[in-house]
Image (tube, rainbow, N blue to C red; front, side, top):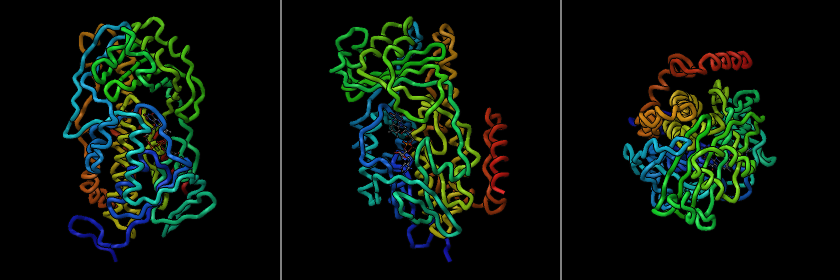
Length: 451
Ligand SMILES: Cc1cc2nc3c(=O)[nH]c(=O)nc-3n(C[C@H](O)[C@H](O)[C@H](O)COP(=O)(O)OP(=O)(O)OC[C@H]3O[C@@H](n4cnc5c(N)ncnc54)[C@H](O)[C@@H]3O)c2cc1C
């Protein structure tokens, strides 16, 4: 029989066998933390080879704390954009605020850089730590019974103690967990986005855009009705990226990489501050990223609690939360800590505790994306200039000062006590949540199907 030691860690010496599906940030975080906790990890990724894909991605100090604990600061920091001030303007070009940005907040750094470059650092680290990384592995089926869980991948049946579906917004694991296809909703918005080389683009030679690259890295934003535009340079002004939202009612496909048309992009800022068109037009190309959204899922875990979805598979974020990737990291770390405490024999308890510990926090973080967007898109120009705090970036301690690893160690015993005393049940949504009724209904339907 397995007993738990004084620190709560399992005394069962057998490592937990974990299959992780998807080598995005959620899957890699889970793999790295799991290897550090001594688990056996197979990571299945359908991409046949690692490619430097994407553009700007942001990690808050809550994720920075994780990178730093993993010893990756020196590798990631030189790849990042080093911002000192956020200059935010009305769409007409009036300065609302020059908000100073601290490199370190709540004891840790924020890391903003090219998604593909940062991703490669984690990918390499996961392999260095002994992850059995299998590229070109497309998972087509999931299964579980009382004793194990597994997948079918490239026709092969693989078995483990638990399976973690970190397979992104188009998750198959989510279908298995829910027992039905959960169709995402259009958010009503899409984002045009670009990343390009500053020198080749001529951005430094145009007085309407040269301030972005003249003196190290810079960060500028403009807000208007239903639209915001953000742009920054990185690596000391070597690269530039921008994003601009636009209203979008087209039917949705969950992909981040549709090609965008530059004439459509420029149309959005036709009567805006001319600096906007000057910056946008320097990009050689851009992508049109449809923003999909979904209410909180009825659950993130399978019936026998041997399969869980994490990261975007469980909870897509609006970019205005600036937390999607950070929360994916927190998920991965929490799963690994819980499994360390539970050991293999009680792995389903660890999976239940994962959902219990994470569900409310993730929802609160997700909501910041909606409130930030509304704050910017509905701002009154005059009021924003008079009261810059009303549109400043939120930097709150509950979100950014969080230590996911420490929290998991501390919260696990209470989660398990609650589960054992009252049976497994999901925590309620935060009080007054706009989705509370819809989620309650979805849970009822989910439970009715399960019977
Ligand atoms: C190619 C790519 C580029 C992106 N670029 C940006 C960006 O520039 N900026 C930004 O903010 N966000 C970007 N994102 C999204 C961002 O990475 C995520 O929102 C966030 O980091 C959460 O990550 P995740 O690991 O949950 O999901 P993802 O990053 O989407 O990773 C999911 C992984 O699962 C794999 N996968 C899916 N199905 C299967 C299957 N059946 N079998 C095996 N593997 C499977 C996918 O190939 C993918 O690698 C990008 C995502 C991808 C996949």
